[in-house]
Image (cartoon, rainbow, N blue to C red; front, side):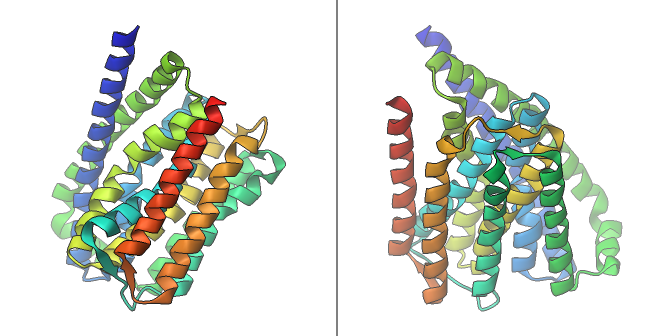
Length: 317
């Protein structure tokens, strides 16, 4: 029995790493777009790079929905948003000491992204996320794209010019990465469910932490690299864009495929509370000065660790 659990956890780790590696492939092909189109790093990060680094969540979420395990996807996405602020942004800032906030990133950009991450919470007040709710979330993501393309003036001429010159290679890398993502995502879902059954751990808890952290590895890698290069536009663009993508595009698709019905919202209240706390501190830190310091990163990471400890203790009582 012990050997069986060990093998399952080992395979889960391998597949999570493969998930991250394939996301990196996709991310690399998308990053070339910014260079060729001569557009803002923040724009590419908040729209394209954040979607690319959120692909593990997208594939795990949609596979979970098709397998009628949408509650698992909900836990993963809520856990991913908490991890993006506390573990990823906080951890990357600690490792690189500080991140300078670009003047192009305004308080309204941060408030907008954090506000979008709470829209699903309000939709869940009736105890479910219906297909109609999913369509609303999906539509909000469409409006998000429209807002960004108008704001940063991404024209069709620029886009088609890029495709004509570099399209084949970028498309090949993208497609290969997508295929690997799909295969590894399905494996992560099945192995996570198996591990939860073997260890008698609630499926929600596995979504909150094991898979949420695994699928957040692309964001962590990107943000550590961005922070070490003092590229605040990429760092904050990826954080804010990932929050919007997880809360609208991915959760919307999950609900459209398989509506989420909760027996009780109580198991999610602690996660919602910590998401609110982390969002508040993150906003205040960004608004207060032009640098996210190592100490502020430590506060964000501390809240994430505190959330993990309390959640594990709560589910074991």
